[in-house]
Image 1 (cartoon, rainbow, N blue to C red):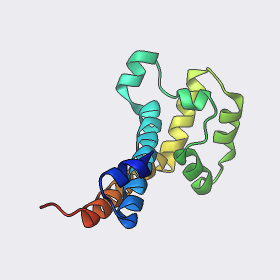
Image 2: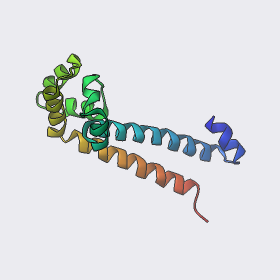
Image 3: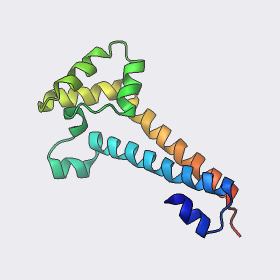
Image 4: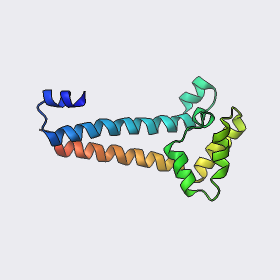
Length: 129
């Protein structure tokens, strides 16, 4: 476990908490990036032939939550997600809806802030030199 690794490194309790939080935040950031790539990544499109598998699966991501909280009519996206559709036109419409509320950029900014804050706390606890 993370605690055992920290103990073997001689980390104190505060350093241990910072390291554990750092690892958890990296996992969250990775998931956000994965969700973004699912919707707009070229590599994903090349391997799957399309984007938006998360839409087909009806996955509730940070972007979907942001859209629901900020859209004038969030029901259109919710209905597409409920269908778990394979229809590429509907999936593309869902992606356009997410973009209309700037939800992809919101998620990207949240991911970068999470990473920046995590690295800053790590640097503060474990200064170089």
